[in-house]
Length: 200
Ligand SMILES: [Zn+2]
Image (cartoon, rainbow, N blue to C red; front, side):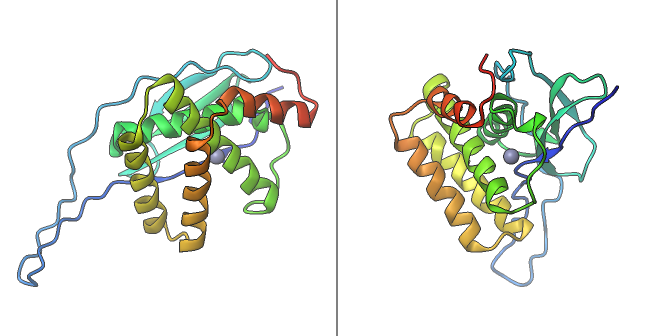
């Protein structure tokens, strides 16, 4: 039986494209930004030890980068990368690891909690935390790269229409996770233990 499981759309990233002159006379707008190179996919397996595959698609809204953690039609754990070339590499790397974390923590195989309810927001915070710590510990992200992630996150969430408190709350969580000496693995193990789920 095919089980297309929960689809988790994480952060949707829009590119900052409009460069407008302060003068009202200039109306030129860059609507066709140069695409970014695609980031190398990270190592990723779910909490059952199954490898997670990454797949690129240009479907979805043009210019809008997004990730989804799913099981595909054959039941394979998958991260769908949609329009990744629309966003900077650092942010692509973040989205990949955020979606991977939904597999690592077992979210994908659990019932989806009510959207934007506390449990959903907690899952998102956990995936953010795992992602930024992996970038720090495995990819050598320092403050500059961290700021690039935060800047893209802030810009894109604002464009999508998230209220400022949601944006700043998410960034506070990321900042705190980035500053903590704990690892991504520490947090994943803690979540799996709490949920009584197997650990790879
Ligand atoms: Zn997510």
